Image 1 (cartoon, rainbow, N blue to C red):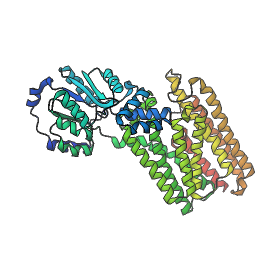
Image 2: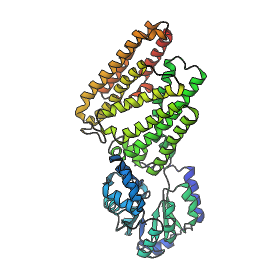
Image 3: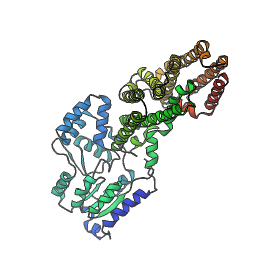
Image 4: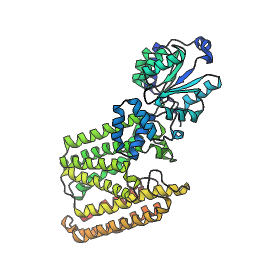
Length: 505
């Protein structure tokens, strides 16, 4: 993983807070201690940029949502039991877990100097030993078992019993490590948060700090997929189609619905990334996503997702109608269901994606009270089914270029690509047929010159043909709806369509 050399103001404050209570290190105490003082290293958040328990829970839920009931039962019996049972049911791919590279390099240097290094973690024993074997740096492993959760004061007592008070150094990253640092000879602090920097006044002596990399704000923007908010402009379609977008009330309600869908979408994107950690880490591009790379923690992601979804529902409840809230809840449930199950079901996944696209149109209708027409919904369903198939075909084309056969976390193989191309092209052309039938039978109700709308058909035929030609040539590299909103020829097609609708009015 890359590590940014810049240190943010936030991190400087943390360093200063720690330095205020740290005794100056002249090097004498370290020389006296020498390699004889063992270095005890925490795992979750310290050596690793993630939490093995949370990763195991997420992997367990992804495989079977009903396991959530088992998790609750295990937790009621204690955290030690929870960790042991999760480890028993989940086989983590420890080779893919992200690490703090700077800290790992320092550990390797300490090992080369002959220092004894002990992995001391609250993680389950099987996970701890597998990770220790991955790095080959540790002389011993101390971990939780089914009876004892080796965290906080329990860990401090275990290390004092093992080495004696003040006869070991300890590397940690969280407030629960304060009791261990008090019993240690020296503290090594890895990726501290601001609260930890403030609490560090209680740490006897800080020998070394591995600061958090800068750029967390950019990581959060990437995790929220702000660029995907472009898809939510679909909530404006009912107002535009009904020629009511210029009315202040309708425009305001559409904007509020847009904001609610943006927040809900970001929350569900984070949930999707958390559930897809293992698959994303095996993907050449998705491995750089903030949670897969460890730039953001799983616990932070869970809190952010809950906050974003809760805020979106609050907006719908306070400012919009109950009908909109029902649609928004359906969108959120559908997206999470897709992340948990449907994305692994061939065919069902693209119908779900098409439904989620169309759900935004229904949300705009519910927010404004404009009843969606049959023609609009039929056109949207066929068009979005085509775009969903293009999205999946693009992923399969990427697999083909890497000589892989099975998409991780998906139900397709590369051999399904020709069939997806057929599905997508057929749906695309059917959407144009629905548009032609609408112009023929119903356009005169809203338009004074409905025959002008016939020109929309060849324009749309050109655009969907272009999308599928680029898909066939492996030149479509993003979500087709985002492509439509950011691609210049597509933008020109949109302007032509707007001009034709204006002329027909």
